[in-house]
Figure 1: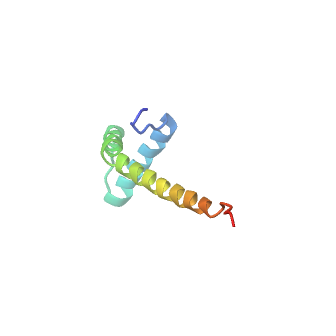
Figure 2: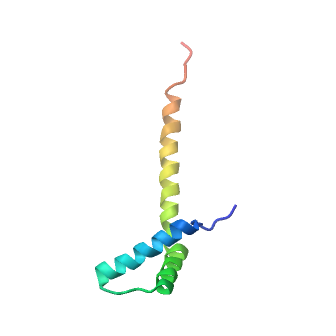
Figure 3: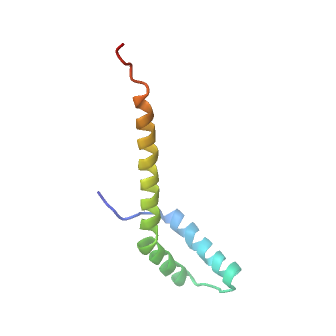
Length: 78
């Protein structure tokens, strides 16, 4: 199983545009294409896995609760 988070080309281009927009609007910096790509690479390598793992843990918790709910559907002998 590939444990690296992958994004398609169109999504990557959109994210890079959003990074450039953010830096321009919030920091008044005109970030170049390369700088935005490097920033995205940093985020994908160092931050995204942590956020992804939070989502996985939340999903496990949600599914565990639903499985526990299924025990209530059991038919018990009298």
